[in-house]
Amino acid sequence: MDLSKSEAARLLGSRRRALAGAGQLSHTWKPLGSSAAISETQHELVEIDAALARIEDGTYGTCEICGGAIGRDRLRALPEVRRCVACSGR
Image (cartoon, rainbow, N blue to C red):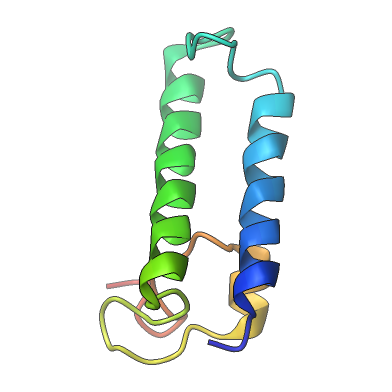
């Protein structure tokens, strides 16, 4: 992984705050809009939590399909991503 743990955690935290600040979640995790919007937001929050867990266990930045590095630019754009560009369509 080309991204430091602290930079990855900062990006993921920022993304989490942006989701909460977008008004898609209430303080009780109930939708303020459509159920599709909350479902998408909840899915993204689950992915963010999974990425934070990968930081802790040392697998963050490693593609879950091929085992190769995901790449700094991709991780910066989508810090919760699990797959490299080559494997993203699989």
